[in-house]
Image (cartoon, rainbow, N blue to C red; front, side, top):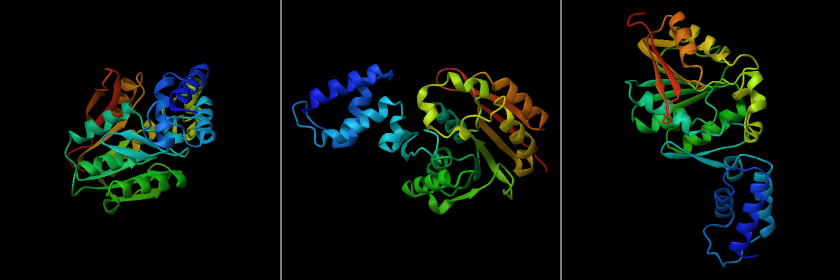
Length: 270
């Protein structure tokens, strides 16, 4: 089978499966499978390529199939044990890089995309990534090594702050914020990602209650808590920050103008 035929067939199969941009995904799968080929080149191992197309037709995220996702300025390893890094989360990285800090704690680090991106941008900084999943932590360590920040990154298993000690200039998190009742409306790809990283099995706000209540005890004077939120949660989370004693509360939009990051500061003196 030649490339043009294989791509046409793959595109039709993905379109029938409801994939949003079937031609793009077919091309990306073929490039992953065999490298860049010309339209009349023969496709090596066509059965292997067909297996990739079947996986995508089952709505498995393409990042899981090819094993990587571009995020911020880097490529990150992705497995079914972590969330597929999303462009919206880059708003959290950008907002954090607008603030002064030398130590950072990333709660629910997953692939480590937030923590590693931040450390890679600032020499001399150090960070800790926390996750409940040991498999996710293994992926984060792999990404830290690939970005050459492993010497400045520590990873540990903890249920939020339970095993966290010390204080940090910055605490970041992209917690599970999808309400249980909203899960049925998500794109099929998300059901291949770890459910625990998507929903709290409640109203989607339980993680923010923990973060707003417990983060001040782990922030240096004037340190910041910055979290990603769902598009309708900005004001609610800002109110939780206020009740937790944080000040200077701000809501930052993503590139589409939707509420995406909530920020608050600890008191200037302990």
